[in-house]
Image 1 (cartoon, one colour):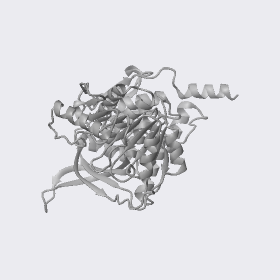
Image 2 (spheres, helix red, strand yellow; image 1 turned 180 degrees about the vertical axis):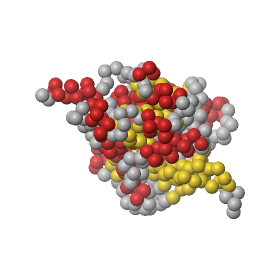
Image 3 (cartoon, helix red, strand yellow; image 1 turned 60 degrees about the horizontal axis):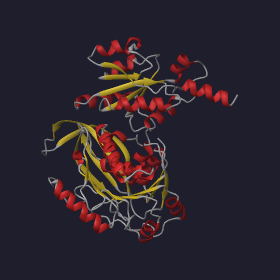
Image 4 (cartoon, helix red, strand yellow; image 1 turned 120 degrees about the vertical axis):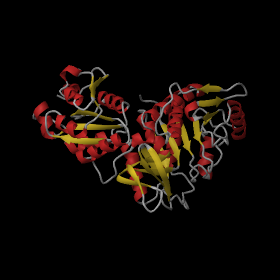
Length: 456
C-alpha cells in the first residue's frame, strides 16, 4: 500500500518494557519477583502513531519535540528505523519515558519518568510548516505535553485548507481540538464516560463533544465494542469489532487514529475511515499489540541464539506459543514480509532462524549473500513482526530448532510439508510445521535477474 503523505504532529515518548519470568513471591514483601529480564524499547505517543502509519506503506512525516538525552536519542533511532521522516522542534527538558514491568503477557507495574517540557519552542520551524502545508492529511496526537497547545501550532492548523483533513486524537490533560477538524477520536475516558456507559450515553456525549469542539465528526472508541461515530445530528454509526481480539491493548488507540487519518488522507469518507480503523486496531491487538513492535535496544544490533532460546523458554513458561521460520533473507521483499507477518500471527513470538554467510554461500553460490549476516539480522529485527533472530551455520536449522523447541515452524507456500526436513523433527516434541501463502513472483533471485537486465 502507498497512499497520501500523512503528517503527524504531537507529543512523543519512549516506551520500555521489562519482560521477565515470575515463579515466586518476595520473602520481604507480598510482591512478585521478576527474573531473567529482557528490555525492549519502542516509540510511544505520536511516534508510535507514526511508526504504525509508516507500517501501512505510506510516506509519513512526524513533527515532535525530543529531549537531548539518552531517551530522546533512542527514540530518534526508533523513529528512523521505522522509516519515518522526523522534524524535531527540540525540547528543553527530559524526554518522557513509560516503563512497564511485564510477565506472562500481563503488566505488573508501570513507571513514568521525565516529561517536564519547560521549553518547547513557541514557533514551528520552516521545515515543519512546509511539511504541514504539503500534507495530504494531518493527525494531531495530543498527549497533554504541550505540542498541540502551542499558539503558533494551533494557528497554523486552523489556517490549513479544509480540503486537508485533520484527525485529532485527544487526551484528558490536553487542549481542545482546533475548530473545523474532520475527525476527533476520543476513547471512553477522554469522552468523559464510565466503563459501563450505554450506547445512548456514548451517543449523547459524542454529539455534545462534536458541538463543543466544532468538529465535523467524532468517533468514540469503545475497546472490544468497536467505535461509535457521529457526523451530524442523526443516528450514530456503530462499527463493531468483527472478532474479539485478546492481546495487549496498549497502543490500540494510536493504531485506530493512525489508520483513520491515513484513510482520510487517501480521500476516504469519514465513515469509511472509521470502519477501516476499527479493523486495523482489532488486527493490531490480535497480533500482540504494542508488544509486537518492540525493537532491540540500541546497543544490541541483533539478538543472539542465546537471546532467542531465552525468549522461547519464557514464552513457553508463560503459556504462549513459540513460532519460528527460517531462510537467507538476503534482500527482504514483499513476499518475505507477508510470510513473516502471517507467521507472527500464529503465536506469541516469532524467532527467525537465519542462514549464516557461509551457509548462504553453500546454498546460493559464491556471489551470495549480497548482505552480511549482521546486516541481514538488523533488517529483520527492524520489522515489528520479528521478536528475535538466531543465526545458524548448517544448511538447515534443525539443530537450532532442537534447541528452541518451537510449537510452530512456518515456511512460505513455495515449500510443501513433504519437502520440509524440519517437519519430522517438530513432531518429536509435539510441534507442527506449516506452510503459509506466498506472494507469487516475489523472490530475491528474480529481483537480481531484473536488476542485471536493467543494468547490464
